[in-house]
Image 1 (cartoon, helix red, strand yellow):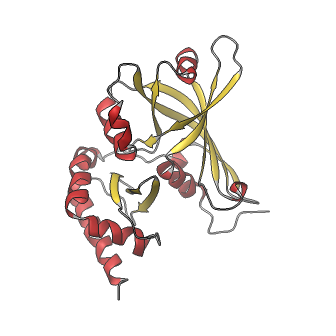
Image 2 (cartoon, rainbow, N blue to C red):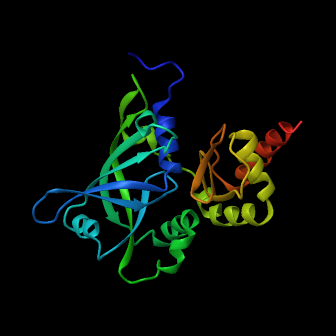
Image 3 (cartoon, rainbow, N blue to C red):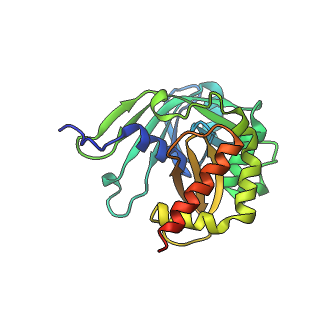
Amino acid sequence: MQPTPDFDPGKLAKSLLRRSRQGALATLMAGSGDPYCSLVNLASHPDGSPILLISGLAVHTRNILADDRVSLMLDERAAGDPLEGARIMLSGRAEQADAEKELLQRRYLNAHPSAEGFVSFQDFSFFRIRPTGTHLVAGFGRIVDLKPARFLTDLTGAEDLLAAEEGAVAHMNADHRDAMGLYATKLLGAAAGDWRCTGCDPEGLDMQDGQTALRLDFPERVTDGTSLRKMLVRLAGEARAKLD
């Protein structure tokens, strides 16, 4: 069976990467090479690649340091039979990301505020998974292998936006929580809640209420702070128009 014309596997894979807060991490046991799987919390880099905060005492961390090949299973946590929901198996290499620690820490803590209590512990480190591909299963006739270019966000030319992200997120959460609520309820059909912004990138805005995460895709790519502000004002107007 061929996928229906409205099926966009790249868009769905991107959404799962952005919205997932937990996943099953598979590594190779140091020494034996036997498979090992563990549950981990995660956040996303601006390009969508997964961010992990893991302890050096954990078996999976020791495995990664010996062989950085990993896979990560993510699913949309749909109600009912979980096998009826979409999921991806992402393969890649996990690298300890000291050079980007400030960025990774900020985005991870936005997604997992409770990690503030141990993020500074010496045995914890940030890792970023550099994907080599993903296997998407989204229902009968919707099984697709994707290369990274299909599900990661191109950050080329978006340096100004990335520099403005921290301030933009803080501003949205301090002064525009009403707009965040409208985005969630009127544009994405979610229930009312304490929605806050956790990140933004050229293709969209990430929001969260507790451990429930949403992805608001932009209709056009934005690459700087000015275009981001205009886009958010535009989307807020569209959301308010739905109040009538």
